[in-house]
Amino acid sequence: MARPRSELQTILENILDVEVYFQPPDSTRMQYPCVVYGLDRGQTDRADDILYKYTKRYQVTVIDRNPDSELPDAVVALPMCEFERSFRSDNLNHYVFNLFF
Image 1: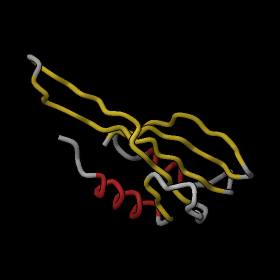
Image 2: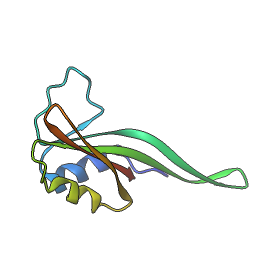
Image 3: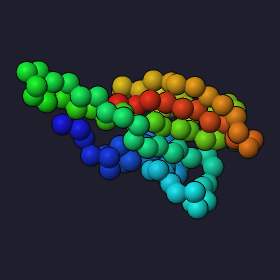
Image 4: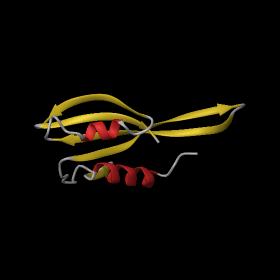
């Protein structure tokens, strides 16, 4: 079955050495650079109507003032991670990834 989210939190904190936020409320004042992630959807595999595999997909966003940040490279190197898109908002660069965990 799916691994605990706390394990993903630890992995992100260790490889990136920046603040990592899980679904932060709007009132949270974030420190940049940072990573924001949240549950996006799940992939369910069944055989004979019996669940045999369930994998959660998280949307992981790296937010950094530096347009040449190395953080996106560290995230995309994670297993089962793919780059989705990037955009700029409020003078911050956002790099969005889909990560199955």
